[in-house]
Length: 307
Image (cartoon, rainbow, N blue to C red; front, side, top):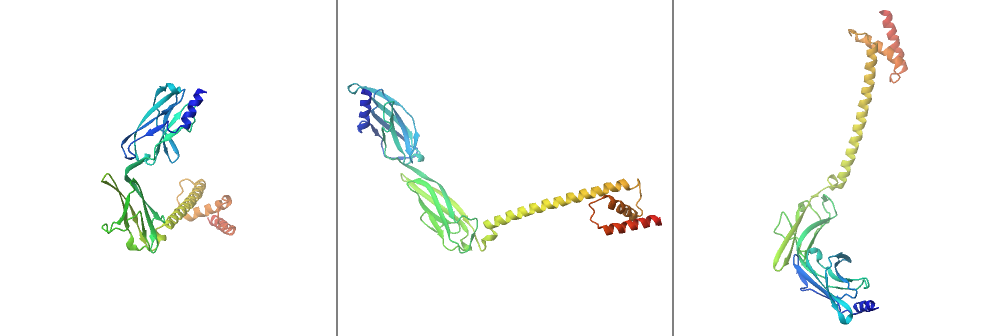
């Protein structure tokens, strides 16, 4: 019961635990020290450090020194966290939590949200609508997004008139696009930390044509259809060539079996008649009609009789 009483004292007394840090605002790369102290009960618990950002808990480390409190039959704990802050720590809260076999898991204290200054970086330009090519008369919206603390300022310029500011916020709109609006658009971003100005930029080329279907996404579809059609035609043509060569090789092979060795083709018609006679008897795939077949047979018989 003594242990439970001491735990309840920790839970109910908000002033027993304390977390301190100075200053409130930091610059990326600075080393910050956090001190946490309080009654950790008996048997003694330990302090756990956590970074809390967007409801996510990221463990840091635990290092607790203990001093006995005789009048309370308990222990006082002290823990120190040394942290080099980064841009990812911006708006995080540092939590010091007691972990003990008899303590309430909800027993913790937190710092205020950390305000970490960091230089502007990673500008990205998003274009609406998302096209490769734009058509005359379209509304084109360019939006620039960059990270930085303090919040960055934005300036839009285009390559053909770099001294002219198109817009001073993160969005620039081309109301009714014309071919003359085709250009390289650049978003300049800046922020200042301790009187030092940091800059970054991102660029996007916008091309405007009279008829987008020749160049745009529909052209991609047309190219795809053309490639598929060409592939099909190539396969069909290859198949026809293979069939033709197979048939030709069959015919030549058969001629070799019926032609006398070392025959001199002084009269090509003799070979033609002989081939016609045997081919119509043995080759089923001939395209010549039955009437033509009979005619060739009669001519063959007449030739043999004359001979």
